[in-house]
Image (cartoon, rainbow, N blue to C red; front, side, top):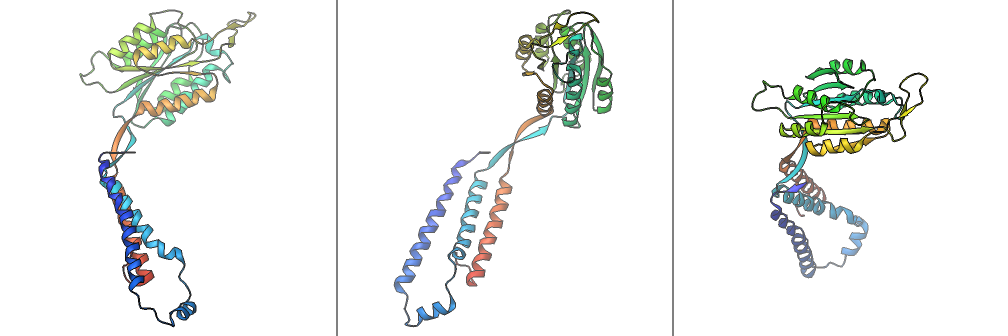
Amino acid sequence: MTLKDPIFLLTLLLIPLGIAAARLARSRRRRFAVRLPTAGMAARLVGREPAWRRLVAPIFTAASVLAISVALSRPEVTVAVPVERASVMLVTDASGSMRAEDVSPTRLDAAKNAVGEFLDQAPEQMRVGLLSYSSSVEGVENPTTDRQQIRDAISSIDAGGGTATGDALAAAIEALRPANESKNPAPAAILLLSDGMTSGGVDPIGVAREAKAKGISISTVALGTPDGTVQLAPGQWPMRVPPDPETLRAIAEVSGGEAFTADDASKLSDVYKQMSSKLGTRPEQREVSAGFAGLAAVLLMAGTAAALRRRGRVAL
């Protein structure tokens, strides 16, 4: 929480001033009080009032002053609000190395599950598209609010072939920024998941620069462990298929996105949940003075009620 006019916190000085004034008034009453011989006996018969009851009304009053001070200071909080017309392309590597089982149950199955959780977390108005690729772009679902369409598309992906990351990113940009788009494009981003280095197609770093020029950030997830292996054909020795986090990090940095690594399914799911929130919302400052003003009124009424209950009159 931030305060736009913190100078009004100086009104908190009213609290110690009020305490000092109350003590001064109490000492004056004691100095000029007329003491009766039977006062002590009467007090013992009636019983002394618990000390905490004398503090209830002043505490409520002090709390109301605090709330009023904060309200006058115009407090603001940062809240996440949905981004209108935002579009996200989920670009998923479906090369042969995605059959590796170092991420349970396989890298591809973990990616499919993460996409499902992304869809669960994404704001309803966010338009989500899906692109899968291996040696070439294999399937493209343009951004839509129809979540079931994306779920059906991700479930049909199979792993096989090479890794043409640059071609996939170029196709994703075209889906987000078609040639006939208006001059006021909606916010857009790409979330790329891959487990290996580019083996064909155009340079993905150059495509990342193009994405940045068009106002599209690319966040990347490097999936897998350095010791991951896959058997590309029956009878062959397993081949190591380590991820390529350096290239993916460079793609993210060039385009203005974020880079992540995930070596297990739970971490991958966490990344997708986090990105769902970030890509679908934007931070916004909102003033909450009215809430503190209302709290101050409630506290003041509570203090007044406590004073009336104790003495039958307002004497805080």
